[in-house]
Length: 478
Image 1 (cartoon, rainbow, N blue to C red):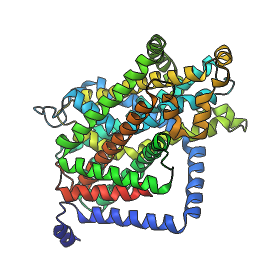
Image 2 (image 1 turned 180 degrees about the horizontal axis):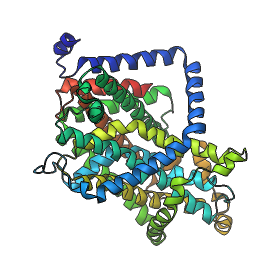
Image 3 (image 1 turned 120 degrees about the vertical axis):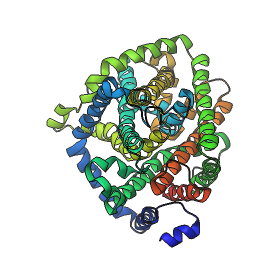
């Protein structure tokens, strides 16, 4: 394999690269041959995990949030990642845009309207009336809980571990480096390579879910705008075209390609959010943003430990079933992302102190997420009708977005924009934003696959980056 790697011009560890590729191809073949049994096996595994370990996910992630805050505020917060004289390579704005665009930008576009409306029409907690004021408050609280501090804690914890051990101990930019205190120099042997292979597969599997959501939303937008059919061939073309864009960006490099694309993308997303703010019920939304901060802060502790124990005890699995489909799903999905986002965040964070790293990665994206959900979520629920009187006044228009979400979650954002001026133009812009989020997430994942294979924070030659994109694109299609 060493000879083949040299012949291809890959600056990579052939064992890690070809083993990862082989397992991925084998997994794809098995899925194509026996999708039914594999689906049933995964379904049974998921049910067991949710039933027996759901409480552990919820408690564990909350513990991570507490630990990270303690580390940041303790004397360890002054430690600089990369040496005492290291300086940050990127400005705070560029750092944030790359954090966010490489993280959950696609998820916010997909769920910004759909999740609040879902919880609004079908409240998570028992004894809460659908479409009521209380249901609206709960919808916002849970949506931000799912994509706020807890999600970013799952990214921050491994990111901090990667950055500390890689930069302070001069170790390879690989997942196995985190285990150096436990296994020492064995990170360079078969055990370390096995850990790196699992990290690559986790990156491919986790990113595929997010990009799959983005593909569905792009296809839904094109169907809404141009009548393009929502079909498998359309999704394949979308993935192929945007993968080509990703190849161009990744070959251009982190600074010229990924950073520039991320800055453009976040600028467009902020513009879309400002448009909704000022063409919607502006005063209502400004009040809602402030109030949403209070809702999140006041409900964070109860939500962080809520397991709906009594519903499980009485045999009514409605509450636990909801948590399995939402909270536990989010945490499990985010864990598959954690090696990818962790290494990517570590790569762009050299020179920052632990305090800057933790507080920045935890709070900057979480605050943006809160504002995003407050503007899109409250706007959507206002359009749908909050409370009996409002819904009676809306007449047949009441529940229009709830119905749209029930019929097709990917179409929710486009149905939402039909209530604003220049709907067609804004829907087209939303498709472009989702597409660029697709490309930036793809770029970030490709860089991480590259780094996991080479062990270097420096970008490898174009063929190495291209190989990372190809590995990921194959899995996305599956």
